[in-house]
Length: 232
Image 1 (cartoon, rainbow, N blue to C red):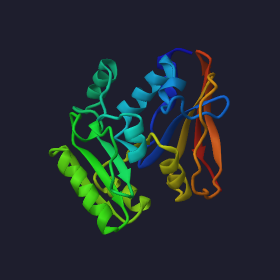
Image 2 (tube, rainbow, N blue to C red):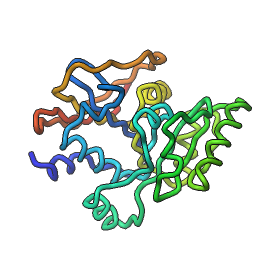
Image 3 (cartoon, helix red, strand yellow):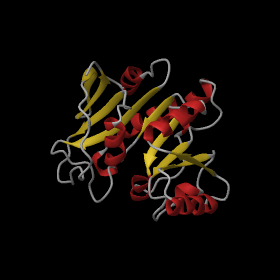
Image 4 (cartoon, rainbow, N blue to C red):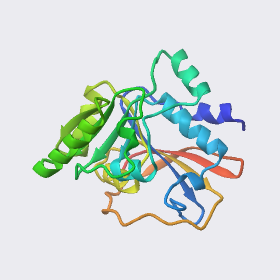
């Protein structure tokens, strides 16, 4: 299976949809030297950009955005061309979720972007709000602050802004919280042949949901799969 055939298996359904995308080592590692990039490979990395290029918005937790040294979404030339052919003049925005309002270093995603991004603060803590407002001020006009009560409120607010197809790139705590709230429609999982990294940190217990396999294939020694939420 070539990349084009692989990518064709990841079409978004009509209507609102939230998918998460993760790469794991065969020993359940989620990071090597603090990031997931060392678990990835050329085809998995290309798929990541394809999923970004076809999404309306990319969602990520603040801790992961800092640890992975995120910038605003920038697509490779081929994915940017395809996105324009689909009628989108710009890359999808990045929405960074925080409960504390704190944005750690590095925080280059605050400024390094070609489109307007969002900082989403969940909860109503006054100190957290001040911290979030200070972070948005540092963005020099590139980020908009969204104040919501919880993650369901965050997803609803994004849908109201016109972002139907949302790609969550983690981290584990945000993904677990979205799952616990019943908000994850699909998991895109890549099993890497690598070992020797660190596993998932402690996260809050998730509500039990069942997913059905929608696709799987081995490409360049990586196992790619999609899992769609079914009846619980």
